[in-house]
Length: 391
Image 1 (cartoon, one colour):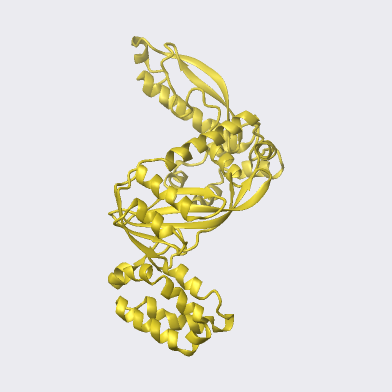
Image 2 (spheres, helix red, strand yellow):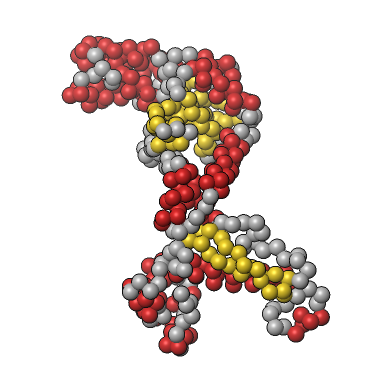
């Protein structure tokens, strides 16, 4: 495929070029190119099948080749200290020494490059580092496919059939292993000594384990630092949720540097508060209000759920613990409370762990978590999006 423009395309006025100099969006770039007429013949060849978009010999790999080789030549010029053809270069000890061929895999297909060289062999390109055989975007595609549950062989076939890039099974495996190493490093990174609030919760997610997809529990710890920024402190995958495993999570956080926590928000799992207090004795354990509401509504008939939800709302929106207790007694003695005693008992059983947040003003009770559904929750994260993870 010839990448050269014909005489008609080369003869366009320079006045049309500023339209492409500082585009504000991809749509504006396309409109400017179409208006200039610079790509009419090129598009016509694409329509007739003379030029492919991607793959070996495609248009996009050709453009990538031109851009990379231009950048590599600029790097060599900066390294040598003079431009090509500059007479001043004759006085310098180092000089250009041709180029060496190299093929790199990209998102659009294989790209054949001519890497410029210098006589001393001291030139180290940064745009395409020595030893690299892939451009960065291809690694992202492989990781995305692997995270989506595709096997290494499936990824190999997919890349070969879609963009014409032929990578070995070992290369793809190495790319995925590098990600696992980065995940392990992130999972064991040092943490801050103090977090005002830490959320501990488990989500049931689908995990691809070998040839099967199974439900497993993703134990997630999210901490709020002194600046009010939320951080994912760690994610642990386990077949079942239990207080014993949560005790290990708390110990892991403490070993990574968390010395103290003011408030730990968790659900009503038996033994969970004791596991937290064993690690941080001075921490206030707050039962998740949303979990508490769900538990209270578990045995409520669907047609009565809205009425029960309105009836229990004054309990967790009360200004203090005493008012909350009076609202709870009023609900217990009401017609709905008599009809659904389990709803009132759910609050009563968790009362000591439920009321700590009532000591805070309303502005501090609502803590909004980024990356979820955007609603404000009472010291509690909402449900995450769930997809198939790969073990």
